[in-house]
Length: 293
Image (cartoon, rainbow, N blue to C red; front, side):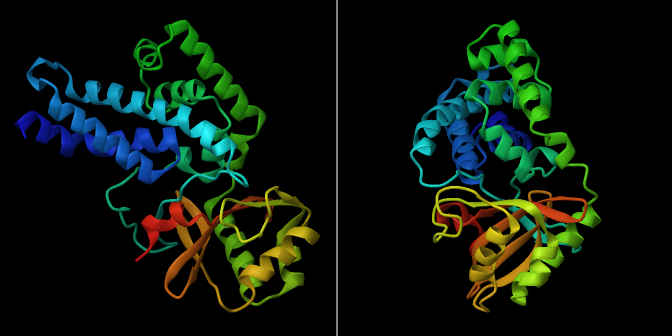
């Protein structure tokens, strides 16, 4: 390995993972894509590349676009909603632990944002992530997406409008302490099998959903209303066979369910005015495999 490639591996890998995870919503796919980007760099004439980091960004982003386009068809045939893959940092309140030198955690990797990014077209998602999040000029975005800079401006604008319409900004205004408090109340109610306490922490119009492998938790469609969501939660988490813990996941407190030492589910909560307005449970074993001991 040449010195330039070795330097690029140590200096730029984290940055490329940041891009790929926000593009794909899967840490495992992001790591595969970045690995492929460096593999292509090894096969290239690195001495002919003026800006190695810029070259890698283009290559990795284009691979991500290809993945998004092929993944869209696969996800449309998936039973149940497709939810992004979580990244756990550690217990809330404990010193931060770097998640295996993976991604930088901020508002753009919170579950609510990643779910909304899933609703964008691959080109819209790429334009928004590359320009709005990583500040790439539209000329560079155009080279990656295969559109003119003007077209990429429109793509990013449509993405921003979608996020505004669905309240992405509002979802991130909840104070971390308040969100943690609601999460712990949710965990306590589920752990104690306390239906009344759970109904008190759930918004009357709460929605709940789980992805593939949900064991009929939310079936194939989201469930609405506290009276419908609460019994399903207790059927899973109020039996004593599951341990719920408040953990720092994707930059915010979430409920992590373990069973016999293995992560069984990661439950993200959207909160407002001290109540849970949405429950998103990631239970697909493939998405949790990288979290297992």
